[in-house]
Length: 297
Ligand SMILES: *[C@@H]1O[C@H](CO)[C@@H](O)[C@H](O)[C@H]1NC(C)=O
Ligand SMILES: *[C@@H]1O[C@H](CO)[C@@H](O)[C@H](O)[C@H]1NC(C)=O
Ligand SMILES: *[C@@H]1O[C@H](CO)[C@@H](O)[C@H](O)[C@H]1NC(C)=O
Ligand SMILES: *[C@@H]1O[C@H](CO)[C@@H](O)[C@H](O)[C@H]1NC(C)=O
Ligand SMILES: *[C@@H]1O[C@H](CO)[C@@H](O)[C@H](O)[C@H]1NC(C)=O
Ligand SMILES: *[C@@H]1O[C@H](CO)[C@@H](O)[C@H](O)[C@H]1NC(C)=O
Ligand SMILES: *[C@@H]1O[C@H](CO)[C@@H](O)[C@H](O)[C@H]1NC(C)=O
Ligand SMILES: *[C@@H]1O[C@H](CO)[C@@H](O)[C@H](O)[C@H]1NC(C)=O
Image 1 (cartoon, rainbow, N blue to C red):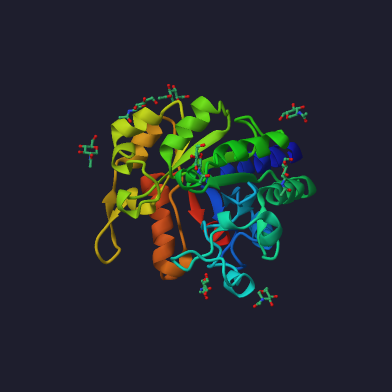
Image 2 (cartoon, rainbow, N blue to C red):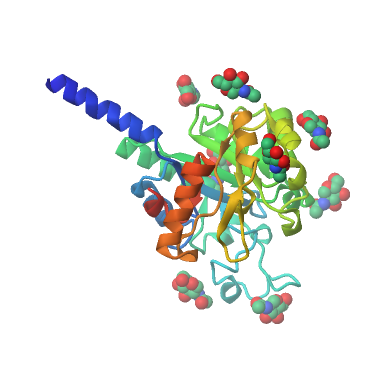
């Protein structure tokens, strides 16, 4: 009797696990300064399955965890280094060396890896790390192969296999092909997708979100991370009209689909819940990239 009961609990927990979406914490959580080690720790404690970070290179080729390629949004860089901006008045990470960047509340990829896998060991939880390689084409203008440096850093931590708790993503889809074929990485790869006019990269998302484009990515990547508006059609008032074919086609190639970015503060609480339910039950996405992992969970 007792054994049956315990078995029931165990099976129930497994089913619960399979029946809920994968939750990917974007920028850590919305409640603390984005991407700081504190914010990443909070996402870990909330139970996010995967913690997503973005990385850029400093002048001396160190991987800095930051959402944009410039510092102005999240630091008081112009107070501390008044004359380092470019003609657009922004201060770019690539113009500063690590020693200078340590003045700010930024972390390096190494620190994030050590924090998250340290928390995994300490808590017995297996959270994974999703690393967005920021603008590979921009970095290559400075003769820097950011992807090579990311893979070398991961290699130094013995994180090289598809079974390791690391996933790599970027908007520049041809870079994923380069990572798989030229750099020979076995890590799981996700293709970020948006609209061409946003100019996140030179990749042609009109092609890659077509059935033929998705087929072209099979055997290269393991999943898609599209803007949610590529997955669902909305009317001008933001009401859902229907589902695009993107998720269906992706599933035909066994890709996971994790749309971004689900931010509760952009919706009334009721409509946010309806939206999440629609993506989960009707579209049947595999998970959510969200600034509010606690709310999705
Ligand atoms: C910059 O910000 C840091 C941290 O918030 C603060 O300690 C420092 O005083 C600020 N420096 C200037 C020059 O504003
Ligand atoms: C940008 O740099 C110039 C000097 O190159 C400086 O005069 C100006 O104050 C800086 N602007 C800001 C917003 O920091
Ligand atoms: C990149 O390398 C090329 C060829 O070696 C060189 O001509 C160019 O000046 C370099 N560019 C930068 C930004 O260092
Ligand atoms: C990060 O780790 C790599 C590999 O161990 C090392 O080469 C690099 O210097 C480290 N960078 C920092 C900023 O600690
Ligand atoms: C690297 O990780 C693999 C499994 O993930 C393990 O079998 C191997 O012993 C590790 N190698 C080192 C040098 O730690
Ligand atoms: C499809 O993929 C192959 C191999 O990855 C590539 O050579 C080819 O250019 C791709 N086709 C298109 C239209 O992008
Ligand atoms: C989606 O797929 C259906 C059935 O395969 C097809 O009839 C429809 O035209 C497709 N829609 C688009 C926008 O490609
Ligand atoms: C997807 O996975 C199923 C089940 O593992 C397999 O039978 C099928 O061949 C896979 N499809 C592709 C396109 O890899």
